[in-house]
Image 1 (cartoon, rainbow, N blue to C red):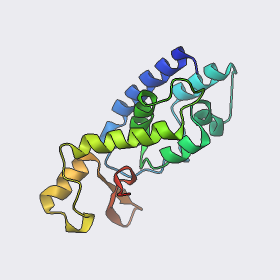
Image 2 (cartoon, rainbow, N blue to C red; image 1 turned 135 degrees about the horizontal axis):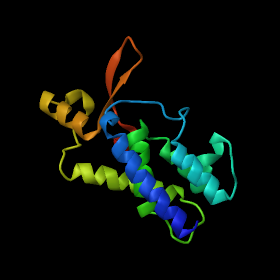
Image 3 (tube, rainbow, N blue to C red; image 1 turned 90 degrees about the vertical axis):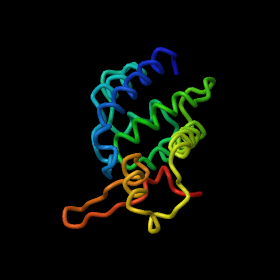
Image 4 (cartoon, one colour; image 1 turned 30 degrees about the vertical axis):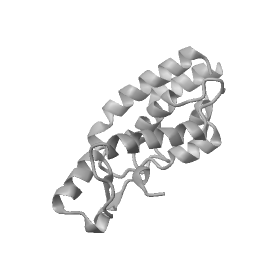
Amino acid sequence: MKQEIIRELYQLASAETQKNAAARTWFQDWSSCLFSLNLYKLACKANGVEGMLDSEVLCTFFTDAAIQALSAAPNRYWLWRLINESIVNRDENSDKIGEGAVKRAIRTVHNGVASSTNLSPSLNTLTREEACLWLACGVTVVKTDGSKVEIVLNPIFKRS
């Protein structure tokens, strides 16, 4: 991938991370949502085309295995955060960002939170204060189906 495209993708990911920050504690299935128009335009630019299918957008920048690893993101904030970190952790000799870069991005995010937050308790044994801290940090997210609300572990922070 050309450096110019990588730089634009990084700038877009940074902006989208900030734009979606307020919703980082809410579970949101992003797999069927539309990506930003700017990502679509960047994918078209990278492929030298005027239009493409939505299903081809992420494939422009990531391998299939990397896209599967990105699917751990519980919402758009965490998706963009992982995209951002994946760019930093990518193999510069590859045409696309691979699964290894996404896994390193997940570790980077996990380790960043773990440096200031105790992640060893299980979700069921958290004190009220720990539960609030985990939610504020995004370790847990709020999941609702309209009638039931639950606090679930962010898949990015699941134990191996």
